[in-house]
Length: 140
Image (cartoon, rainbow, N blue to C red; front, side):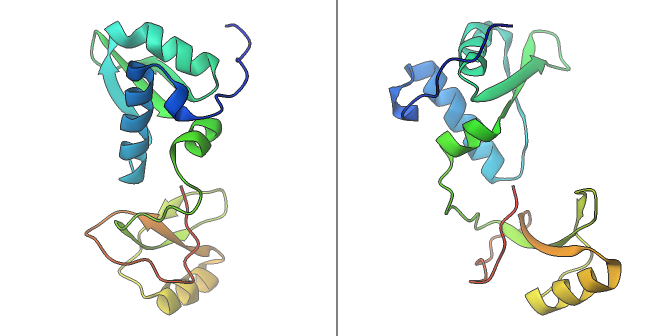
């Protein structure tokens, strides 16, 4: 694989197909999907985005498909750091990074349960729409 190119100054500077791939991945990420499937005919565009360090990709499960995801650089280019999904809930993140929904929590309830489990309470994308608490720590 070649060395990544310098970062794109603005995602709006990408060619249209690459821009749309980035937007699809950002939209899916906002709903909690970490990767998405595309037709394999988009491989040249996936290579270009991967060379820019914006996405990672691999062959899909179904023949003729590719699965792609945003890298940290891609997340920074595609999603505002102040974005909070309206589709989220309080959950528990265990040591090692696993995040699970353990019942339906208020912020106080999530923090109490997390303390009991030696974990931390996090606000994460899932479930029906609900407003983000002002004190929420947002996870990706």
